[in-house]
Structure formats: structure tokens, C-alpha cells
Image (cartoon, rainbow, N blue to C red; front, side):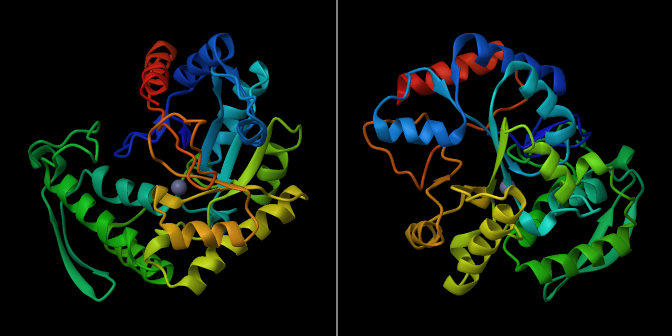
Length: 313
Ligand SMILES: [Zn+2]
């Protein structure tokens, strides 16, 4: 499971792999594994003919760098990939909210003293200049304890925003942007446009799957909203691809039984979670296919991680 092939300054969720690392990882997969398109991977599990060293490459969200940076590397090695598209972000000139939030807070060098609205809450934002924000580093990860004021603030707002409905979250981002002063986003940090997606899928090496409209945590939503998020994103992907879409990925990997049956009902044939494991072909849930989040590793590091998962499965 990949998200970005890029080198962002702040990457608290470790979703970016640097281009030369990605290249090294793909060469390793080409040399030592059997890379398959997700559709074929799933068909061969069902047929009982999956090679034991098979892998499938996926990307979540639909970042533009998938087209500009990852696709040429994949094409040069003849490796297929599936990109799961957050359809409500297609063509947006703003960065995804979690990246914009990192830009507004973690990358901010100036002090701040203002108030922002997050849903019904008024949140006081007080930050010292970055050189007096003890413990602040560009390389901080959200999985580590937060040391600086910026890190604490980022994490607490991220946690709140993640669970808000889309309109309330967008209103909170507007409030944050006007209080903290955002800069325009780089196109490669944004989602692909319809034209980008048509180019991405034009030679058949890369195909798309659905990843909801607004990237909510699905289990928390009422059933009718869940259904709309899933079905509308599948429909948009089908219009763009001009073909039936079989695959879906749960935002944040969040799923429960109700969510899984809605995804099934809406016509998907399989769905990926973020459960870090290898596929165990003896007991496969096609609506909970596990994936390993690939980090900014060398090809050899990725090979070790894959080998360990295979042993554990
Ligand atoms: Zn996602």
C-alpha cells in the first residue's frame, strides 16, 4: 500500500516514498516477486493458482504524483498497479486536508495567537516561533510522542477533523486557513483531475478502484450516508474508466461488518483494508484484503518486510 511517491517536508503518517526509493523497491519486486494487477491477484486466489511470491501494488487517495512520478517507473518495469480514488477530491486545487493541516501547523515558522472553529468548538491556537518550540523537528511522525507545541496541536486537530462530517471539516479548514494564512498548493500535492486519471489508465498498466467521495471513516456514518459514499465513488470511477470497477479501499482501513456488506451490495467484488499482513490463501476474506504500508525504505528493506509477513501468514 502506497499513497505518494514524493519528498514532502512534513510526512507525519509516513505516506511518502522518495522517487529513487520507489524505483529501487519496484526493481526488487520485478526481480524477486511476481507482481500482478489486483484483479488478477484476486482471480488467482479464487482459482487457487496464486504464485507464493505474488504481490500487488496499490495506491490510496489519487495523488497527482502517482501519474507524474510513479506511473513512468511502473511502466518502465511493466508492473501493474491499482489507484483507489477519493472521488470528491478529483481536480481539487487544494491539498488533501491532512497535508494542508501539516503545512499550516507543522511547517509554520512564525508564532501564532488566534482562535479557530472546529465544529462546535472554539480552539485557542497559541504557538511560539518555531526556534522556540522545543522538540520540534521536520521528521516527526504521528506515531511518536509529540514533543513540540506544533506537534501536539497538529495531532489534536487531526483527531478531531478525522471524525467530523465533510462539510463541518471543510468549514474548520476554512477557519484554520484564514487564521493561519495558507499558501496555494503545488499541483503534485493535490488529487488528479479527470484528464489526469484518463492519462493514468490509458495504457492499461494502471487501473483505478474507489475510495469513497470524501474519505470518511465509514463505520461511524449512518447506513444511508455510508452507501452514498461507496456507490457514488464507484459510479464516478466507472464513468472515468468506462468499465465496471471491482475494487474498493476503506479510508483509514476502517471497516466493520455493516460497511463490508454495503461495499459488497454496491457492486464491488473485493476490498482492501490496511491490516498489515500477507494474504493467507487458506482463509481469505475478499472484503478485507490485508495490505502492508510501504515506507521510505530501500528495496532490500522492503524485501525483508515482505519475507517476514510471508513467514507469519
Ligand atoms: Zn486514503
